[in-house]
Length: 141
Image (cartoon, rainbow, N blue to C red):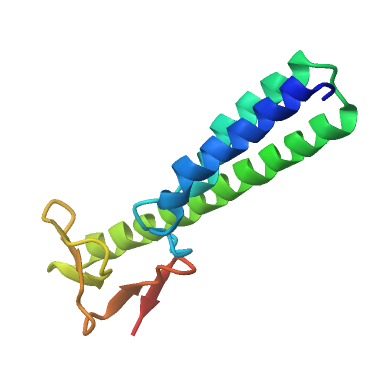
């Protein structure tokens, strides 16, 4: 990007994005299934704005390639976390279908009783099934 205005615009986008998103990252702690499970897609709004600025001014192929690579990285992270998230719940639902009673799952961030599926989530350290909130998946004790 050439000229002072496109550069200042990009700096302003980065600055505003940092202020807006900074408070969101503290809640994730790299846990797979927290409330901010898809924090990787937060790059989309600044990405689109910067891409617009890059294409509006005289574009440099290297800058556009850099932004495109960041986009692919963010989309890949979002997709893999979503797949892990869905596989974990599918496995829990399959276990619940096989069981005749309600299954208790240790997952402290969520305190829920799903009577329809026969699952109870919450802070149950003695439960036989634990959800690994760091790596995803089910840990059976």
